Amino acid sequence: MSGSVGQLTSVHNRADSSGALRGLRMALFFSARLQANRSSPFGLTLLTTTTIFRVSRGAATAAVVLIVLAMFLYPGGTLRDSHTTGYSFSQNFLSDLGMTVTHGGQSNRLGAHIFTASFGLLALSLVGCAVGFMRFHATAPRARSLATAGAIGVLIVGAGLLGAAVSPADVSPAVHMRSAALASATAPLALLLLAAASARDRRLPRGVSVAWVVLAVTAAAWFAMRWGPGVDSSMGLTIQATIQNGVALVVVIGLAYQTYHAIRALAAVEGK
Image (cartoon, rainbow, N blue to C red; front, side, top):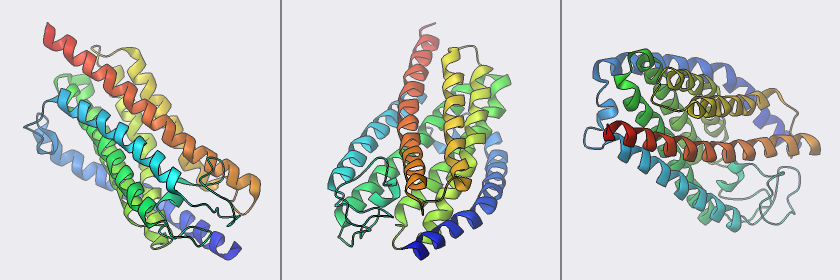
């Protein structure tokens, strides 16, 4: 078991430096391409901005339901103790839910499929929320470029989360870790860019930009755990698992908050 943990930690460390660089290159490339098509980013011309926000909120809600279901179905087992029963917020990583075979050697195929679907919906929610704000800020010259760059960053985050979900840690650990590293390395800067864009758009309440900052700090804490205490100790596992699960909870709450205020702001603009 200690050898497996060490191998996973090594993959984590190798992925960190390349993850941030790949994310930056991809963000710059797509940002340049999208600047010429600000009014309909990603070709979503048939959906109103309000609809995009509502889809984002619905996807986040569905993702929560499926994650809870995957937790309920998880047979048990952690990195340090293969004999535990059920899912533990302080001892299991969300990635454990996507494993086809648990640490205890039990089958988890149904739960793994549900987890993959839930993270796909979460990625859709994140991207939808970012694209919605990108479109919202398209008419605000001081916020437009920042929102575009932030949205591209969140798109990369979503791709990383989806990549981690479809590559179970017990099947493709290297791909899983690199995908997660890409998401965690890109998220803080992308969210700070959206915070700056929201702060420059007077149509939004100050709470929206503050919420983006909170999400960015939360994502940075997730990324910083690459250099946190190792999971080869009981305390290290508790800290790492609790922070990762906490980050997911904060993200879902943040998405609900942001989409709510965005829809309200759009209604106010359209009502004038």
